[in-house]
Length: 215
Length: 289
Image 1 (cartoon, helix red, strand yellow):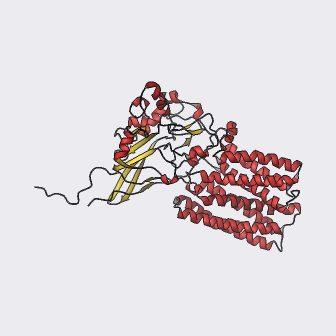
Image 2 (cartoon, chains in turn cyan, orange):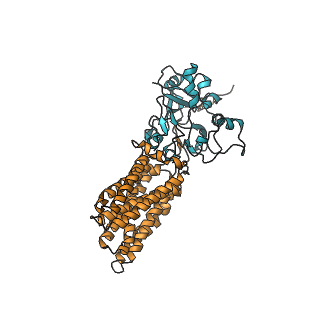
């Protein structure tokens, strides 16, 4: 059974926000809605201060609280580990927004474009009225992953079927793949390194691993 | 010596902006309405005297649900809310509501004794509301187990306060209801204090705690101490009880409005381990030749 997941090597992330831009370009999210963002975190006290970067988005949890609370079954978990939303069922009640500990969900209440009334070409191409007034979030570029089998490609290895953020990462900090395949890059990488997941105490089982040191 | 590179840094919580007064309206109307139905049923076991209050309780629950309907992004798909009974407390609340109205109307029109079933459904509705908040893991102030207790007790207190306010209009025996209301006020005050202590122990975001601390004094004094004094005064001037009921009810509504709209901060993010980049800095520099 496939379990798609993402590993983000915090040692490599330089906070360039290219993944953020790639996500906005690929998914044409409206202004104010970011399915992916990079947190800029300062820690320590002078003179031992640090600046670290942490990309965050939907964690595609094993036990997604958003799925549990969704009253309409619009949010559902797929067999391959992706948490998806059926926009035609969603009523925009925002209960999932409240349930997500990772601030991953947004609701846009009107069609907005980056530069006023006229959509950019990518916004025109991606515009979907069904995404207005309903919950939206990072999909791990689900439509690309769904093409993988037909194209005979492997998500995480072949760019065509890999999330846009992973493709765009200029420092190679983001890795995507099947966690249940011991030979996959992500499985190998997690074996060789120390990692943590956000808010594991909430028992959501996030599908995003943050690598911080070698094993 | 190897430097300790394990550290923890946090990214600020932010306030939720998706649920506003309309969502709070559901918790206020639903809580007061179901609390009123339960209180009125206990006051009048035969059901006959409870009928006007059941009617008002149903109106309040309906008003709360209408507020939610105004809030949701796709109101014309609202019936989809019924689809996930197996795990979603919002869905369960939505299933209980039509049963509550159906049985409530039967009670009003045909058989007052059915009021006990209506009260049971009202209790289920109130409990569902408390579990909606607890299931929202993204808001630490809501997911705390004591938040559920507080919401249930507040609903019961609001309902009983409303009953105390309205009883003189129906010429009912009042002192028993006053006593129950006093007990509920005490219970809510304790639940509030225990809840806030629980938030501090659980290290819920400071912003949430500050917002709740900001209403603490007024909530306790105006919502509990003053109504209790007014109830004592009602032994001499019965009309004072009406003001006590009104204050107890409004204070509960005000607290819930704050809990839903102003104290609802996300938990933020934690960098549990600082990334280890490059090599540790040397403790002493090698001498230059």
